[in-house]
Image 1 (cartoon, protein in one colour):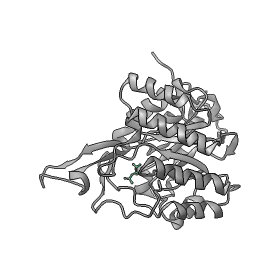
Image 2 (cartoon, helix red, strand yellow; image 1 turned 135 degrees about the vertical axis):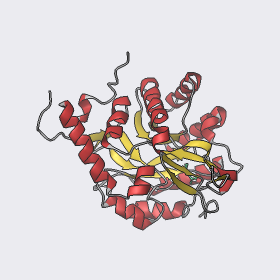
Image 3 (cartoon, protein in one colour; image 1 turned 45 degrees about the vertical axis):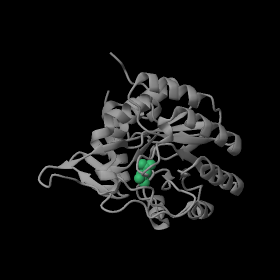
Image 4 (cartoon, helix red, strand yellow; image 1 turned 90 degrees about the horizontal axis):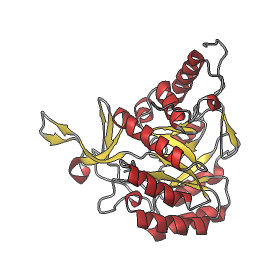
Length: 315
Ligand code: SIN
């Protein structure tokens, strides 16, 4: 039943009303204050910082990002300004305008706990997201694939932080892993949101003509994003939406059009992040995505996101 009324893209995240469900993916357009400011000025309804470490990092050697016909491969290696830079940005951020997530990716449990304690002690409305899933630091495994280490980290963070926080997960590919990870996450009441997914780690793109890898770090192995990963992202969003009914899901992966946003919402996401497409198109993309999502909703006769979020049909 198509209608001509403009749909309302408004949503709520942890009881806070937002103008729409769109935001950047951590790592894209969010390393420097000027980039974060550009997101604040865009149609994105929320912002997340680059994942930060205890001290500033240059990251991996270039070339470390390559755009591809169906997405991108990257091995950035957590280039960031160090956590104090992002705490300072958070201290000056206008939270009435839009929420700010601070993404944290300490290189050890102790590093993570130091950063978490600092964020707790500054008592800002910033939202903590622990990144359990960076595939690109040579010699460091992703905590999200070591279930015991992940459980220990979450126990320590939950005890230290005592406020709502979230995690950024790597993609999982097996129902046994969905079940195990969901059981771990469900143990922590303060773990309020789950971001699915980080890039599909350690892919290898080969240039046939050059007979070569296309990025330098890790012999060419890097995280895949863009169209390649949309079905994996949707599966993870829906798997955790089903298994973690008290948690809010943030969808990330393969979002390039309003239809992709709609699919993430249908799978159960409350917010939807944009990575590769934001990297390629810049912050103006949020206006286009909002328009395309509104057009699709109008075409389908939906007036509000609540009318279809999480209502994926199965056969
Ligand atoms: C990177 O900096 O290598 C990407 C961060 C991530 O995948 O979490």
